[in-house]
Length: 473
Image (cartoon, rainbow, N blue to C red; front, side):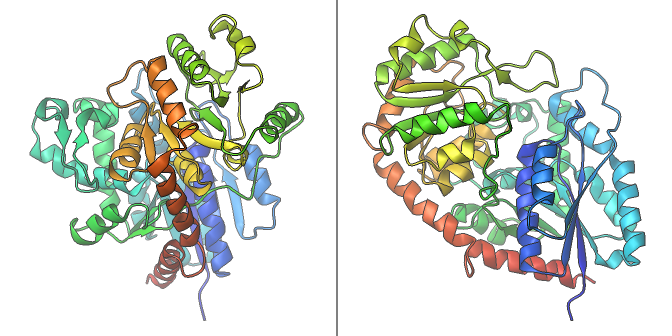
């Protein structure tokens, strides 16, 4: 008889980490009735939590998933670098996490049934799990190739004494097929003296101290990285590619304040021909300079193609998120909205899943966040890459150079993408049909969908993970 297993997830704060983690948890409880899930939610530094999303899960038909909102811990000292701030802020929640897990263990009367899954940026909790005698896993919510870089970083750090950029313009990284431009690495990896780099190095070294690494990716999508994990790297725990874990069934339910905005977008898309619209969206935190906004507008106007553009205003303080412009004309070229009326629609917040799934969408100008990439592949929409921050440049590089699944618009060297480049990229996907890229995306879309079906690669790997979690002594 199978024993009950309680899995405790501690995702990093923010919906881009929480949502794919919850979607994985749903699949665990659906596959094995002996599994129960507890989420320990760390509030954002501003104190916000994704309450609407949490409520949608708890009010759904999914059973055996519960949420505990942790008390917000002290903020790190002012002036901390973003990566160091994030790591220290999460680390400050250790006492709250330990208390919650201790209470859970006492209720179950058996710490042998509890498993801890930490986020890629909360590896400071691995020692606490060891202290409590609880097996720990890491859930890596980005791509397998970037995981390979994290695992390889301690070796790279030891081999190269100076800065990576001074060492070479390109790096041969095991988990990437082609040499990677050094400028495509996250910016904080280009300064080894920074606290952010030291935290990247720390996280990469701690992944090896877990029972397994779970990845929100697909073996067929990143077969090269899978080969590297299985045959090149040594001393790493099992790596489980179980993706894509996406919030697809829970399509956006607009509240009263966003309903008219949502309906306006969908009505406009309903009136457009199939595969005729390029969608521009730069993530939940992505914003653009006024100069760049004008270049995009000029490029879109010159292209003559239909577009839906999610344009957001930069936050005014450190912990704020981007907001909708009250008057987008203030950052657009004079008369732009009038000249593109009918074939272009400007919006602020955008229901991305609903838009990507719409028949009118033929291309996606994306910041290359991993969740957005997986959604785009799922719905068979070619990407025009526009990385902004963090590992997004690496994601864009992998899509374009290693996999041939995207068209490059902005690369690691670009501070400003001019109108001519934007015009050419949009036309290549919409007017010229995308050619080989669209064919490959269509093929990979089917592979991603097949992977999570019974007998698929991710379905089978999830079975292995469930078995391993169940049988740890």
